Length: 318
Image 1: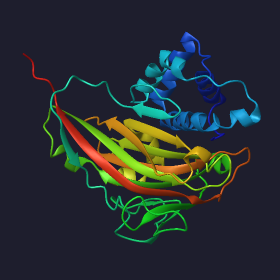
Image 2: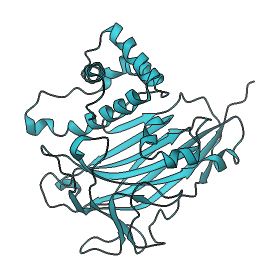
Image 3: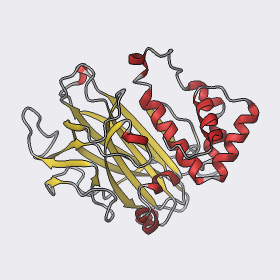
Image 4: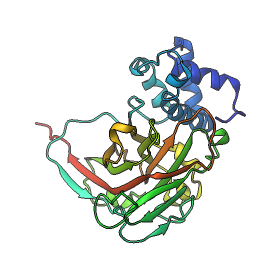
């Protein structure tokens, strides 16, 4: 975590995640998140790492973790102050907007580039993304069949190879390897009606071949939606991740029971009308008691990534 933030922020965030906020402190937290972009960024990291560190607690013989359900008593207030609505859970997270009643459905495939990784091979460009509609990120490469692991479909797949140190997480803890693709959403708004409810859904297949009893950690599938202009979001990456207007996440935990199996994770958001950029974020996190910048992830794979736009006309008044 960043250590140069006011101590009061850390106290509020820790209290919030442990269900220890008073009514006055809830209002204080909402005010802090509404007034400070830096506070929202740090809050984002607290939420992210709270779910990650939950897997460390059994090995540290910590007290039984709370379920997160009681967070809903105060979280909507804090989340709304940050420009987000709805709750967050460790294994399935959605920030979005209240769903209106709808009729009919119309699906369109969004132009996610090279979601099957068949168009190119070799190492991905490093972050930050040089442009839209390309994969980039930490150490990762597009390969053909690897030993006993075959692509889920086609002839190629992506292999996560090496963790990089996140500049916002001290000493790169937890060890993680992430890949991203940024998309300009403005063409979406040109294809839907003004009163449509529009959702964005990403699906991705992951495989863990790690032979250790705890597996390789956790796979993460995430959608980040930003209201900033495409040029500003790309130029400000990765800091612009924290200025989103909608967010969804789904995690797959690995272990002996799932080793060698392709499994699919899905994340879905309702797009706010001010959304201009979406980022597909896919990665693997290895939880450890010791920081591991540069940790190896050669036993983790990704394939069959798709992004779907769904426009639902609002129910007409009678």
